Amino acid sequence: MPEEPLQLAVIVGSVRDGRLGPTVAAWIAGQARSRGDWTVDVVDLAGIDLPMVLPDFGGTPTPAAAQALATLTPRLERAEAFVVVTPEYNHSFPASLKNAVDWHNRQWHTKPIAFVSYGSVSGGLRAVEQLRLVFAELHAVTIRDTVSFQHAWAQFDANGTPTDPDACTAAAKIMLDRLDWWARTLREGRAARPYSA
Image (cartoon, rainbow, N blue to C red):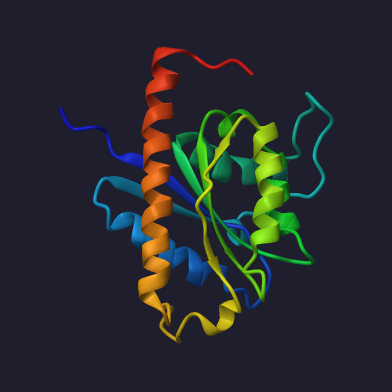
């Protein structure tokens, strides 16, 4: 019996004007869709007006926050795996991404997270290393293999196509293969033994 398609959420972490994130996210989403057995949901945080002020623990979100969460939370809940697309700002990841992470908790539990990063000379890898610490606290599993774009604005043409497609496609295949293994293994684990955090 064939397995159920894998539910993947690709999160666009930057909300800055003029950002490259949607281009990078569209490319990696296309790589994931080409596998044929994944359902891909691109979650662009720029389209979700999530407040920066969180309620007290156990408190009730404001109406504006509740509306934003009604859009975002079910999508994170459905996802069995994530690809986080992040730039590097000042040696770290965007506040918009941390805010979306912090508004949630159990939605990340026992799910694998891969990273596609972009930036200048570091290719965004310093942002990724910090995100690994954040997601470890949330009982998520981060994938070692990443896709990283150095000097990112020169890595895509006007149509959003990578200028060196062979290298990044090969890196994406390795990363997505690992993500697939973890997502399916953790799916089986959750079904067999409920996780308590």
